[in-house]
Image (tube, rainbow, N blue to C red):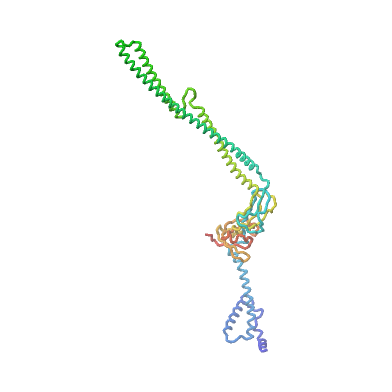
Length: 448
């Protein structure tokens, strides 16, 4: 009761009037400062404030709180435009990534290699689809196989003919060798016989010469007639000619022997090469021809085998093709389904390249003109996530944006000037495509 009476006894003129000059912002701020100083002094006073003093300070505190809240709101909403003007930032930006379009190399029917869900993560080299062409052309493959089979069937016959010719050639060579050896022995025997004849002729010549000498000495004394001396002289001449003829035959026999030892045979009733030698040479030539034919057949068989392997690979490539992912990523869009007939070159699916993440942003013309390749940039997601630092790698301007991105930059239509930023750690943010935010560019700083 006492407090209430004291509060009622306070002079109403001491309360602030609603039309007071301190109702403006400056006055409210001064009142708030005074109130804060009063609170500070009252905190050091040894006695507690009275009820009348508390009632007098409460309106000032309320006004001070309102002023503080208003100043905070003004500061926040005023700082954002100033920050946008001060910083080089984009109007809008999105975390993007490049797409890899997989096309079929052949025409045929699509079959699923494995069950792949939408947005499924795939490793590089994963077989996603298989295209089967049941109407592949195998005419050349069949022709090569027939030719190879025919050559393989002919080869045993050629090998048998070659073996027979080689055997006949060896037999004829043996006969020719025997003939040559026999001819050499024959000539050696004839030479021995001629040498014996020469020795006999020389003995008769010596005997006739002695008889002529005796007859000549007796003819002087008249004991031998002239006729007898003439006969003895004639026998001496005959023996000399006989010896000379034998020596000529010996020389001829030695010539025949040397020719026979060298493989040539001299005679009157046959040519210089006997029939066995001639047949042996003919058979050797035939064996050489057959050997060449056999080698050519083996070469053709080997070539056909290699061509068959190549044609089998080509036929396999034309009859069945595995569609594999060249990069690690996610399935972005399936453009076909199992059982569908496709043509060569037709796109089957698109894979999001998780290692090729980029940030596409639209900027104003003034910001675009101040950017350079290599400038540092930072992507600030709208969801409050950690900023992603990167480097400006492309300044497209008003030209057409790349078409191999998951999110077409043309969708960012607030400003026509486009900028591409490459994150420093693309793999860490590769598959978080679609996050929106803004890109803040550094002022006149380039990446090292």
